[in-house]
Structure formats: structure tokens, C-alpha cells
Image (cartoon, rainbow, N blue to C red; front, side, top):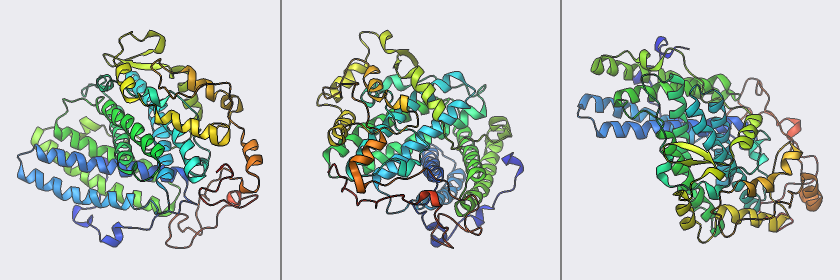
Length: 483
């Protein structure tokens, strides 16, 4: 679709009532995993839209332009409210965190697979493994604190497995500054990919540093503190890929173009009819907002926005299982580390004075929370929590944890990779009547008589039979047998 040839909703019709803004949330027991991912990503896209608009207004002396930005910001704010309010109140912070990491993994993997610039692809692959390991660490804590299996959120579409250890994600922050693309030669796809991933990681960073104090457990609080610091590095990494010579008007147009691309992708792939209609409405809003930004670019810089963005929308917000790709990247790049000049080398090639070691030694002098949580889970259940359909891969979890370290190891690093993760069958036997089996399930593609399957408005669809517990009763939070 060429958004420059479509007619959007007039601006005067985009302001909505509070009831229209604050819509009913999805039901976490029924929502499709990738619907939840789209909600999380688009919330981040809209937050970035507001942050950028304020930044632009602060450096502009044009009153008319600042008034236009302010009017559009109200609409973007309402859009962000609607999207973020789709998250239900009964979804715990750790459950939402598992979903955040699923977004990071599947989004980054998809973008890397479709990225035309080899250097940008390498940057995406490097960040991918770090988010993959974050999911593994948070999954241990989800089990320990709430007694929940991460597949209740992931629905079996994303593996839970260690990657480049989180304790090794802490770098000299200057090393995260990579080489930027050239705005005159870069594909619009590359520009959209970098902007999308930066917005997603920025939201993750903001979320973790604001909710990490929601738990009383010192171990949970420290884990959020550690991983939020890595997410801050990710924002630096991805924003450094963007050409700093782009003018603020160019950046504004690219933001609006990227929002069109992401809403269009969500609309084309959404399985929930009610939420699909939200994506369709906001796509129409963004088409008009893009037209307005493009008119300013024409008037103030005498440039055609189509020369900047191209005429075809990319599809960045595509969520699908990338298991095979993630496994390939894990096997090939787990021992890569950042060095000066925006490059990577494997651990044996690191210089003796590698600056990141100094940061790691200071931050992890009292141990790494990301290692403590693995030790706690092994102590409680006899093994770390791993979820992958590849049994041979599952048996490699401990080896991957230990063999990919970079040498400046935290004093509490979990050792002994000969200790294998407990198979799910053994865990079920250990838990006895407290265990229940949850099959991977899919929502009906057509909803219930054309009505919403996830919203609380309208008729509620019956849960598919595969989602029905086969035995036992779900225990209350914190009542696992190991407790």
C-alpha cells in the first residue's frame, strides 16, 4: 500500500471521547500471544511518537509548526491510551514482562531476517540473543514468584533457553554506539526497522525501570535493575544506527511513515476482530498525519516525502515464530562481543584491556541477579526452567550458560553444566495433583459469530477445547509443591 495515495481521517474527526479512548481490555486467558505482542509494540511506537514530537517542538522557533505538533500530539496521546489500556489489570508485572521479551525476540528476529543492510542485520542479531537470555532469566522468576509456566503467556511459540549470559551484557556504554546508516542510500525498510526496534526497546527500558519496584523480593528488584540497565544500552545501540544528519522534518515524516507501516502490518495480521478494528482506525488517522508532515517537508525544505520514504509500506510489526532462526543465531554468535569502532569479535579475540570488563567487575562485585535467579530455581526444583521442543537442545542449556561467558564472571555464576534441566514429565510427576497440562492453542480465526474473542464487550467466544485442563486443578499463586 502507498500511504501517500490513500485518504485518511480528517484531523478534526480524530479527537475521541474518553469512553472511546479507554476501551475494554483483552482477557489474558484467551488473548492470542501475538495479539498481546502487537498491543505492547504499538504502545511503544506511540510513546516514541510523543517523545519525538516534544523534542522537535523544543528546538523549533516556528509557532505554527509547534501548534500543529501540539494538536497531533493530543491525538497520538489518545491512541497510546487506547492501546495501553487494552492490557488487563489481572495480568501481573512478571506476566507482562514475559510478553515484553516475546515481543523483543520475535520482532528483532523478523526484522533481522528481512533487513537488507548486512551491518544493521548484525546489530539486530546481537541484540536478539540478549533479549532471548532475558526471557530465560525472567521465566525462572515467574515460576518462583507466581508458580506459573511461561508458556501460559508464550503459548509455545517462543523457546525459553539461555543465550549470551545476561551478566555479559553490561558494556562500556561507548561500545554500544554503532555505525549509522547513510540517509541518502539506506532503504526505507532499514530506516523503518531501526526506528521500530528503537521504539520497542525504549518502551521496554521505561517499563522495567518503572515496575521493578513492584515486588518486595530483593532478588526480583535486583533482576529488574540489572536487565533495565541492559535495555538502556539497547536503546543507545539502536538509535545510533539512525543517520544523525536527518533533519527534524525528515525524522518527523519518517516517524509518521513508520507508524503507518506498523499499523498496516497489525491490521493485516490481527486475529481478534475488535482489536483489528482499532488498528484499522488508527491507520486511517496516521495516513492523514503523514500527509500533514509531508506538506511541511514540501513547504519548508522543498522536498517530496516519497523520495524519503518510498511508496510501499514495509511490514515491521509482523509477529510469527522464529524458532529456527533464533537457534541458528544462538549457535553462530553467542560468543560475540562488542569492541571499539562498532564491530564485534568472538571472546577468544577480545583484547586484554577490553573496557567492558571494568564495568562488569564493578557492577557485579556482589554477584549478578541474573545468575542468582537460576541458582534459586535449581535449588527449588532441582533444575533450571527450559522450554523448547528440541529435547537435544534442552540438554545443552547448562553448557550454553557456562561456555559462552567472556571471562569476567560474577562471583555467583552458576556452575556445573552437567546438571540437566528436568524434563517436563518429571516435573509433572513431582507436582502430582497440582500439575495441569496446557496445550498450545489457537483462537478461532473467525471469532464467535463475527464478534470479539478477546474483548469483554459483545459475546464471549468459548475457549477452544485444546485449552481445557486435562487433569488436576490450577494451583493458586505461590502454592507450588516446591514451596
